Image (cartoon, rainbow, N blue to C red; front, side, top):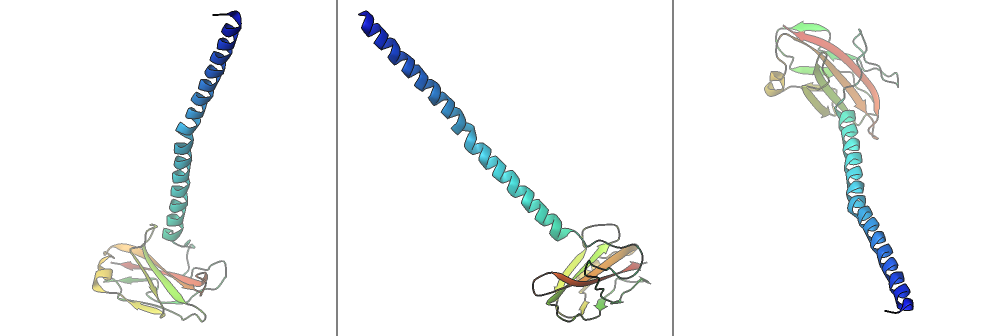
Length: 168
């Protein structure tokens, strides 16, 4: 092979080697780039979902003492029954004052000191009557906190209240 052909051949080998290096570097990007983007998307989606579940499942904050829970709107709902009493059996009825301009009420009953309601119901009237199955979710010997929140047409809480009771 002549000297000119050897130089030309070496130049082609360098160019081919350079292209092979570029291909290897691009393979590395495409091999991990897409799975990494998918992984980040899944983690971000899971975080958003978890935050949504936490927001929905979290009870409203309970103030110490008193039978009323006051929201940032400073509009309390007067709870009527049960209210701060000891009962022999689980209550069958929960009632509160009516709030004008509300779309619905959200009633939640918790074992005192827990964050998961034993009962949650959305209603349009200012009282609920529990079924025997719902009453069975409240065993004797425990203290309970119940909350009611009036929601406006946009879903925002416009007033709320709370009270406690204990089942002997």
